Image: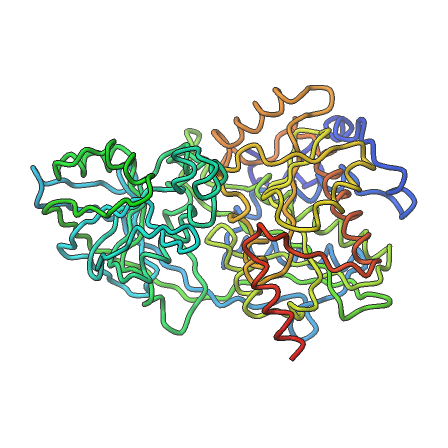
Length: 559
């Protein structure tokens, strides 16, 4: 951990030797060189080291870390020739937020074979989206609703014939396709939006549930329980709404798999048999005997405003048509300390790398003078539920029907250059052939995401823009690392998820290689430049979920 002693500058953190290694074999295309200097690994590394330094305190919204971060991004954009693209001619879009900090709260279960107390952190993590100093569940009936999905297009409704008003639903993570690996059931191994935890909380609230508890399981969730502990504890942010979150369930949260099995056993239910049954068509929700759950959540509430940072490179011929680039600047700030006492989750990979790429792509566009305008959107609150991108999608500064397409960057690789490029959410839009063309110019090939069951397309900021119809591409480094091969790359990726993701150890280390980070950013720049200088309007493919939203958006604009 690089402590904020004042003795280390951003550029000194990574030695000149390490930076030299990052440059080795950068291998940028000749085409890139014709448009000015390609994105530099050294410069990318300098941005990452600054943004992920202890001075920035993990970049949590509405903190000193935010102040330093948004000013740094705006200053770097200005130095690169990018124009302010925010509100009132400035760099920012204010995002009203409310922060709730829930005191550690046990869940008490009565009515079964024996009373059960589920302890905070070790057994469960619960919170509320309701902006109230105290929220209660009192003797709420527990109901197992399988995957908690109501999907008419799949002829699937876990809530069929069920009244859950005032009750607490217990829900499995992911969807039946993952559980069965049946390609004809939902999307098989590939997670659908119905598998995301965000959908499950929202759907349960729509059905009137008082509480929603998702059973955590590492494989279908795609992350270990430690991620739940670091992500859903401490201060929790949300966009400030007029209704103060009263349309949400009173209590939301996660249960460990072990805690869930204890509940089912206390109710006299066969956990494994019910989990298997929940993945089959025709599953019916099951009352969990006489089990009732109670909890009292005491909250400290703070209202604030955070900022999206917005830059623009005006188009030279069609300035009222926009290419959008997104990356989130926030991370989770102070978090559970590791064994050394380090309690800053610096977020070097997630997502100082994406912001570094955003800044440098913007500078490349400023030099290239594109025909269409290019919007650089550094959003807040991604780690709290895609808040900044959600707010922009609902309050766009540039018309969504005139936003041709967009590209998102989140957690770019620091393992070095790769021969492959991962398309997250393969087969969704006509942007992929364009990316393939420019990847080939770098001597690279497109590959589908290795873990489609993780639902990564629904987990970053492009998703909020996709939901309102804008064709959005989310691409990332592959694993076939030049000189080391795919097995080494897979091992590094697995190590990051298991040991660094959302932990204090996601910080700059001397062995980081930013040559691949820079090459990925250059790829997205070249792809976007091609689109910016053309008359193309990429469409969603028929298999994507967002075509209807795009059609409605364009139709509304034509009126």
